[in-house]
Length: 481
Image 1 (cartoon, helix red, strand yellow):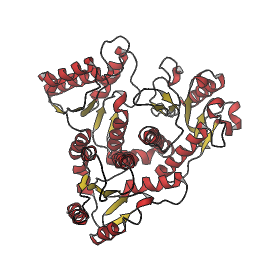
Image 2 (cartoon, helix red, strand yellow):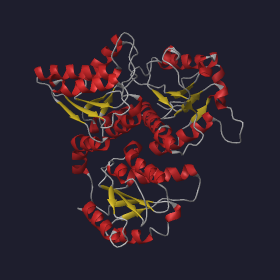
Image 3 (spheres, rainbow, N blue to C red):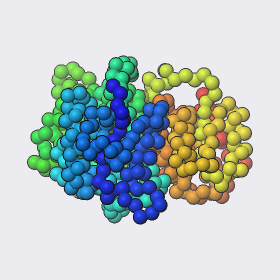
Image 4 (cartoon, rainbow, N blue to C red):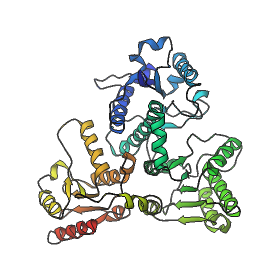
């Protein structure tokens, strides 16, 4: 099915206002989404803002693939915006009952009751900034800051892949179904988490999906206990495995309950596990508990202690209280990489992405020589061009490397953290192969809190000028084995 417009963005005019020469918020959002979708689709999608689509004033929306409403208080007070949502919903009712074609984006926070009824059950994409210390809400002004990397861009990646799935399905259902059948493996219930683990959950979700797993829940969980339990039980019934990430936040408590959504999902998964054992069915659970619970409430600590000591809930469950990166490595080993390694084509030279800053270009030249002599093709960052183009090339490198080496020369520790985080997020950008090695090499005299990076399984290479090249050669040799 072909559409005149792939994606139509609906918004209140006030949300795209700007007093500067820069693009308004919605126009900036469109630019980034278009760039990400072009990478994913392999071609530029036709994305229009409501203001660019004149005929929308007499709402005929059956020629639109998907809509993206930008939700704010101004949006929900706009009769025109709500009319467009209603018109699109009616236009697609008969043609795509089993496929979501509305992707709601939150520019500012809205409660469930504040949202239009048509949109309440849909998964939302939160594009606003949350200060991790104060909890204060704000808009991004620096789209390439560390916090934007962790929140805004990961949500853009999520949104792009979800829209991609729908567009491919709508344009060529037969091909999409065939591809899904070839790669489909298990269905996994990835439990909703507290706000402190949203980014990490999204990374894991993307990694599972890129390897062909069906990940549930596929919609926002209801806000009342009865409906929530009904939906979660149905999804768990379809799943072979559930994964639970337990951090400092106890989570939201649905209407009619005194337990959080996190607690309820865990309880239902334990019930499913017991029932599956009696019926001799396959179902297991992976439960990760944060090793750092200094900010957890007493209620959350009590919930965690119950998980640990309740023998019945541990039936068919593996509970780990390790660094999250270690847990993800175990998950990859058990679910993903065993199959990937069998199918991975090792012909040709392996690729190493040498991540460094412009200021250290001269200093890394001896490293490039060592890496190439060890049999690797070397990818390096580019520094000339527009920020968005440079980021696109950086993402391509993150998708295609086999091993990664971060070089810390004259840059600060914050820069290193951002690059380590990029490696962590690489599966979310569409990687289809395992990472065979990752390391951090520091120049002589550099000071660094190495424990932070060791917890992310980064190999620390000595900054001693007499030993660093030999240590690098050892790392490369191990990657090649």
